[in-house]
Amino acid sequence: MGTAADSLNHEDIELVNLAQGRDLDGNPTGDASQMVTEKLRKLVLARNDANELWGWKDPSADLYLETISDVLRNPFVLFVNRDMAAIAQSELSQTQGSIEQAFEQALLRFGRYWELLQRLQWPTLLVSYERAALNSEALLCEVADFIGLPPPTERQKTAVKAFAFERTYRQITQSLE
Image: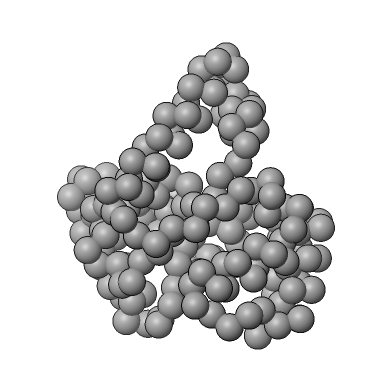
């Protein structure tokens, strides 16, 4: 998925930083938005050339996805959402505002994503984070089916169950194939 070995949240460090106008170390580059978009487009094209199937995780993709949509090859979306109260609670801890403001921000972000998905009309799998956390094996099978991959192996299912059981961020160092 393009995630660097030191990523704690499994986001694509290179793509996320680039989209935010930062270098790989997270330092602002000072690039104008047009330059950021051009760099993103070049990265997508390079990954298209290097990989038959690839993807990334970025909760802020709604801010740039449409500007690079024409260079994404056969795009589809895994739209993972948390319970609105959980999102608001997370927002509250980051902003120190009120719970009402945090909930409003969560609703606005959901609305922006939903409107974007309606405009793009890409195949989209709606995923409940809480439901997925309860049955990670079912989610693994559903995602494989959605993107057209063979059903997961028993080894892959076992690894996903172990990872979900811990519910902490850690790196998987062995191949799951």
